[in-house]
Length: 205
Image (cartoon, rainbow, N blue to C red; front, top):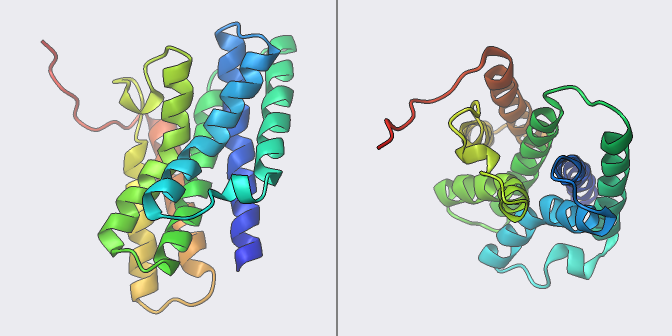
């Protein structure tokens, strides 16, 4: 199971680090800036979860493989975005993939730590969206999850986390609760992107 979680985390890191490379190109960062932004995007959310949940040392400090994966994915995405015209929703779909992967991985890890179920859902959601928030903040952009134009985002992570708890509570064995969380998170986020589904927003000043 640990190997599965590690692999899941690496794929999530690739997705979010690549989003960092895309944003770096859009904001005209240089290569070093793109590397830095990609590492923050790929590892930021997991770092927040590790620090809050008391994991020592932070996973990518204990094993630097995710760090180099984030650097590589970010640089490749930056160079591709710099030389080719990417589809309009590339950033949204990279975020959707990373959100689903990190929600599923986070729920599995936090459940193993014996954290209160409701707390684990919120913490997994924070971890899944944290890298994107840090990425956009450092790029001096409104974080994607706070934009009134953004479709269902954290809602998808919360739905995936709750689906994990329901499956686990129903006695679903093995990796299925984690896979269900991944599928539900991605499905809700994808539905939001495709059908432009949003929650009710504020009226403004």
